[in-house]
Length: 422
Image (cartoon, rainbow, N blue to C red; front, side, top):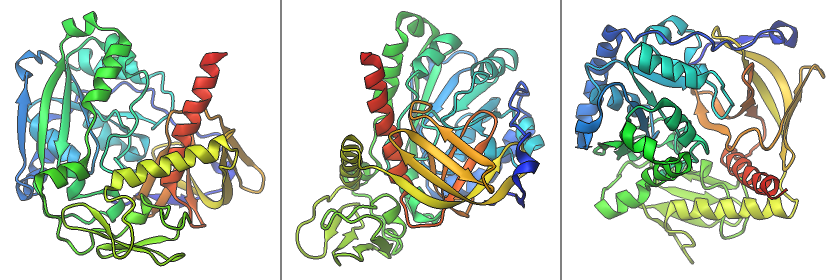
């Protein structure tokens, strides 16, 4: 999938602002039917099946919360809720060049990891006025390592305010089918889903927002690589380790960063020469010497701890030249040219456009970061911004956007804990 781009200067975009104020339309049933039909071939290819739990209690329009693994998720949703109106909460960039279509679908635009005061009212309008189910991916971004990413800390508050049945959809096999790091290349595997009415309106009333958030965090606990290992699912494609350095950016043998490279079924370090093979059953194994992390999520957890230690020691710093893209309407991604991005415990700072652009973002402005691999088939990106503009930063030097996300989450936790103690 591509996105429309246009070269521009700062003067062109400085007064433009994202407008997500329009109430969502009632979804056009024929478009939902078309998405369902177009999705059938791939769903047949993965032998999709679903298990339903307590769905007899899901009366009326529901809030549907689904984990986010790959683009197949949308096809699964329209299969599961066929013949029912479905409004999807989606990112603003999805509207670029196709605003009318997205409106006809009943979609609800929002900006990832940005405070959006209109989102609750728009979701409520879709549920209660349009009588449509609302599909939301609470993780906001695709999973990096096959486990759930951080959920919004106040999702329980949203559910309490809406007061409608909450249905969860947790897929199994979708990440293995098309992991984000692997460059949009699909593998042969089965995909299933568990569809559950997690909460009825009566149960929502009985619980506090914190209890609901805790329940959602428990529900969104999964590990695609462990599922693969336990089920003995074989991923035999010879490109299965390509792009894996996007997740595994730090070598556990020599501690160097951005020196790993995945090729075919191997990932190797150019600094120390150590090589690891991603086996068909999902385990990592060193070609010689110790296998520090046979399980990829354990490697990723270790990287998180390394980032946290850097932050606490005052050593963490992202400092890179970037190419800047801006979304400030639904027409295109405006490319502004070169800039510079830094990230530290004090937050983000983006400069460029001959000194005209100087944007800062505090570390407490978001609990996570919109970081993505091979975004719209362009490049890995880091996106920061607010309700009016989103700045897409395309790094020009070898950096890990996964590390930037981990650092953002850990800095937020540190700052939040410090603030709460005051």
